[in-house]
Image (cartoon, rainbow, N blue to C red; front, side, top):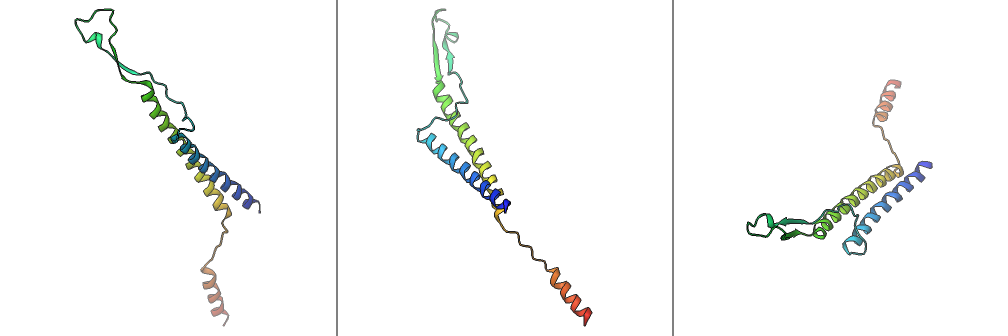
Length: 124
């Protein structure tokens, strides 16, 4: 009986982990929650004063090619999605263990019928 209780606990924990990851990803994509802040790269810029020969030495001719927000946000969302996929996969495996504990184990042997026939012929 205790394995049935453990099976139901594992099944409910696994389903909860899957539903949590799905709900969390939904909230991130609808912008109701923020993704995991894993990346914080600086913006990508190019110093044009080194390329121009006639530019004054003190001139600041930096051109921003890619802002830090446009670089970090997709990377953070991708990392969040990857992590929630890992949580959902772990939840599936835990729920699968619970289902295996809940299933009744039935073993039918064909050899027992053969043995019965063999004993019948020997006794006759």
